[in-house]
Image (cartoon, rainbow, N blue to C red):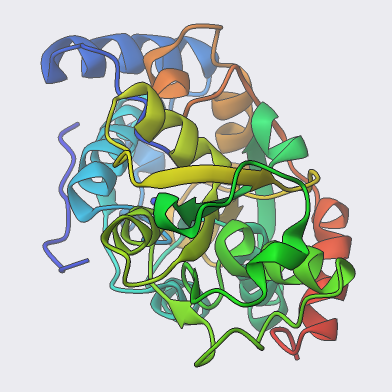
Length: 311
């Protein structure tokens, strides 16, 4: 079944292997289909509507389109469903569209996932990557500051500082928490902190000197570093302690609307059944997907409430 993608304007990491689109989709489709063998549907149980897939826009739109367009095609082939990937403009829009049912399956960060579940009773975590069980943030500085790598976050206090999105887990929530734990007011930077909107934008702003320091998703940092895409003016200063982060969240209306009563189980089996080295895992920069539970994000919710980002 072909996959249609919504054409709205508008994120895991782009660890894209050197594979053509044709070979990537073929490999992903075969692996995903194998993961759900025996889960086919008869014509009598055809879905009443497509599965709408979305993601928080935490990276450049081109990266997101390649990543989630591929995931949509692969899920469509494996589950015999029509699947649409719909880009969104910001983190709040992803939460809002999930609440209204315009998005069914969304790749959220820890904080946005908590916000979405609290606003959407019956939403169910499906899976997270192995790396999301101990995710980290990387603090970076412009080389002109003269700061060498260190674990002393207090040195960042007098610098012009930017976070990523205002509701990013790795680009705002947890870094703000760790800064406060180190004795730095997370809102007290000169002129107030900036909010770049994405991890890639944070790197660009620190490289240009618009901000002297910032913080971003450690996976994006490593990926861009491996690609040689980090400006030499940007210096890795410190890495945070670990926490749970990204995960797939399924809306409560999805099973009924698609006509697949056990949709949550099928999606969970699909993602967690991917074999090592599968193209989808490579795209997500992961060794495997593992089941996700709401309890994994209890600390995120607690910190979100403490910092006023969850009500």
